[in-house]
Length: 313
Image 1 (cartoon, rainbow, N blue to C red):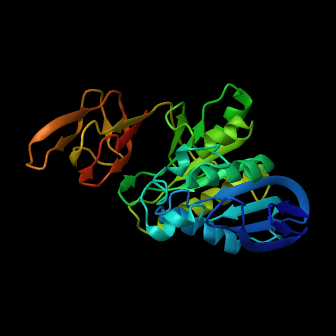
Image 2 (cartoon, rainbow, N blue to C red):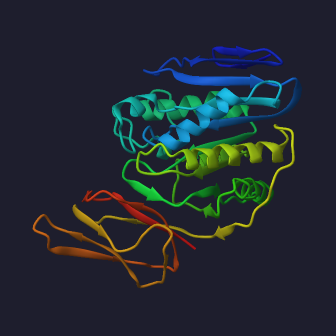
């Protein structure tokens, strides 16, 4: 028997239902699979950002496909973590507190809605699984090339294993994150001495079957590697990126990028311009490092501190 909060699944069984947490306004849909044999426990989650539809679709299809006959150990899948953001079509943030859920972990029990979601996930789920696979994609105003992220850690054995898992999604770029994305799922999991990895595919609020399948196949390959699924895992060449350099808007205005996703840029190369409402250039953004454009904001409207793009090298 395996219990997560109010949901209970017996050995060699699969259930679905809502996780009800005391201080949350919305319950979280969940699938739980308890295999015939003991093994690792894994969380697959998606919908931390409610408009990243490809990742949500991938998690849901995995949840529908996999059964207790397939699983060695335990698997919990949360296909739409941020349900309010999903139905409100809210970009980046929770509609109630306007906070980015992936910046507030480990959260607060009596904080804002995003902080409470983070708190309960951290307390009731992250703490009781061995590995967290967090599926993402480009939000409604983001284009991106597929990439995975793992957290730099003083625990070298943990970091090496996280890097290994991040490299097994069949996704060409693997990013080592330092302090750029504090408060994220994978940094919170890392602080518990466990492995957390983010996989990104899909973009711009489009339900893309190719990208969904990329995430599904990559996740299953990882599950084979860690022994939760039977079968041989595949290893493909990847490019390991040691920097994850974000660029943000210093002013409000109209954003005109000068590069495309996947472009290789050199230090000093222009990345884009922000213009005022009269079409006059107010500022130009230049590359501070060599790197590849991993994601790019495609919204013409831009506000102070909004992300513009990120480079990896």
